Image 1 (cartoon, helix red, strand yellow):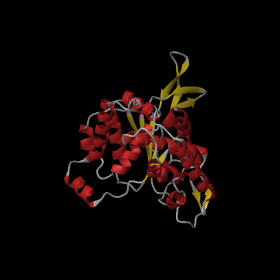
Image 2 (cartoon, rainbow, N blue to C red):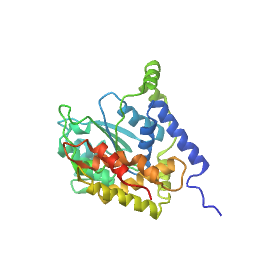
Image 3 (cartoon, rainbow, N blue to C red):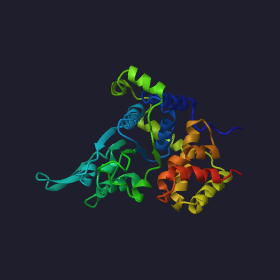
Image 4 (spheres, rainbow, N blue to C red):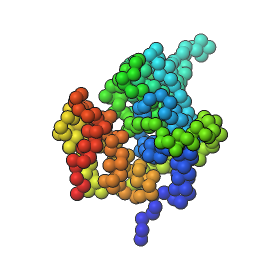
Length: 313
């Protein structure tokens, strides 16, 4: 007797329709859209690093509308305070008590736009929220809505007015994506078609927040073999001894790779994780966690070299 399918037919149909709608709104970025879905369904957070004007905000808004998630966008600036993100307690004269006024972080999809323009103290205000799905203000802990998904955008660190994200903050992001310029055909369609923001405003939800939580639960049912675990361990070990890498991947990075592989398996209609799925997400999950020599080719190339160095048994 065959085991039950990970997703029912209606769930599979709805998930495919959701991805198709986002791909219509974000042209020519099918791989990045798939990885963004995988990041969300794996229960992680997404960092997008690229130049202004390449569709980072469009991707975030498209996901929020399509998945039926409450959305907040916050522009990070040099004078932004932690309380501007988390909220503040204000004394109520009538009730003779402090009343908490929640900040923009109390949403389901938070777009932290240009996160590296804020100083480190403000950047770190998101740490507890991203790791624990809660915030603590004035000694009181407040739970965040579920699902809670942060998409942070970041300008390249060599642009003026930026503060590099600390390693502890980078590690909270399951993936880091680069969108890049669209290919000529997608750019032509974009220029000839309707404005992206108009299209997003006219779009309707394909999934609901409750369905997203069900899909996250389905990810946990994806099978992982002992052979796959051995391959993951080999990748982690290679990253720690690879030439030009000063700090390799931690066990938490290994868990992130595993979650990404399981989410990709769900998106592609599979019930188990294969080495190829881990390879498909490896650079986006691993590169921003690697500390490499300054004179080397860079973290992304180091991640690709690590993949090449580890054979699949």
